[in-house]
Figure 1: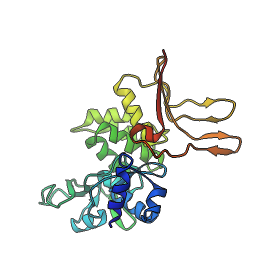
Figure 2: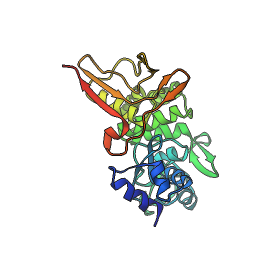
Figure 3: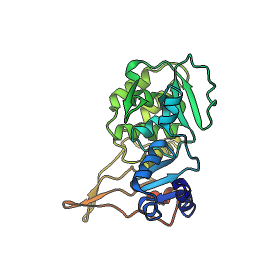
Figure 4: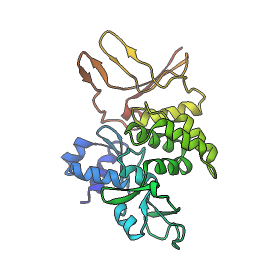
Length: 273
């Protein structure tokens, strides 16, 4: 049985989510999980937690080499090791503008046309891929607001780009999508600790509840630690599970297995009366 089929069956039991230890116990090696994540077939949405797609992708390196292009967009983000909020539907490859193929000419591959400058592409693990900043710009222009913020936060979290540089490039962008790129520049945050925190920030913004600070330090007698997000106002509190420190040891909540959606990521909400 193909690894993606095994993961799909496990995901059916938990809203599409699969724990790493469960996947390994079912016969999917950790190396295979890494390969599927880099190809975009599955998305690592939290530590040891994967969201499973249903499409077996043409390997990005095969698509890029056969089309004489570079891996780009969300496929490039995955190749750079950035976590995606969901599995990629297609493998994305950018080719030069003088190539004649339609963007859907190859099954399972979305072809984009652009004349990349030398600094906008590089070799990673033997494969040509768009640079971190070029990938950030492409995603900010074309992805949904939620996906753009979550993925670009991942680039920031991994140290592949710096927040001042990202905001400068996004605010300087011209052409279609410029207004959304500027909105993305205002919403991204290099302090984001997870995909869920990034998605929650966009959700709060859409509801007019975005707080003035991204994070606050919460202390009690037992532990001290930064929450993943903040209270958006006096009448609503949103709390995400986060690592808490006590002395020199860290405590991390165990990964839930019986629920899906927001609860699977430790999201709880309380409203003040």
